[in-house]
Amino acid sequence: MSEDLCERIGAIYEAYYDDIYYFLLYFTGSQDDAEDMVHEVFSRLLRVLPQYDGRVTMKTWLFSIAKYIAIDHYRKQKWQRLFSDSWLSLMKSKEGLPESEFETKEERQRIKTALQKLKPHLRIIVILRYIKEYSVKETAEVLAISETKVRVDCHRGLKALQKILGESEEGGIANGLAR
Image (cartoon, rainbow, N blue to C red):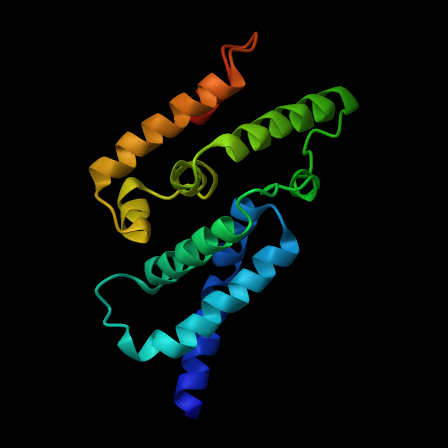
């Protein structure tokens, strides 16, 4: 491998590691699995980088690779729990008040449980749009689908979350997701 290629991959790794890691962490709920899959993403990148033609951004291309790795992981782990309790512990309370921290953790647990129940293609879209805050266009590029399909599936994913979560006294947790 040439020194130039090593430097290029190193720069790509530095620029996008966190984004890819957190996407995979949200999908799997496991730090170990996310780390393993990130390494798989960059291993695949090493093999296919010469084929990169620049039609999409590098970030979009990497997320596309990560998406396929996440789907493969899901298929392998289909009947196992996809989100571990460690996912919630990564979310620190900014409030510091025990009551509100408890309510926040309880709400996150409900959302996490609801996300588990979504079909994988809806879960990926919800994660990209509402957790990673990707635009419709970016989400469409990552998933290699039309922007219309992203909008429709976002709507379906949110409706499914609302159905799973039910209505709370505040009008439903999922309503807060549908900004």
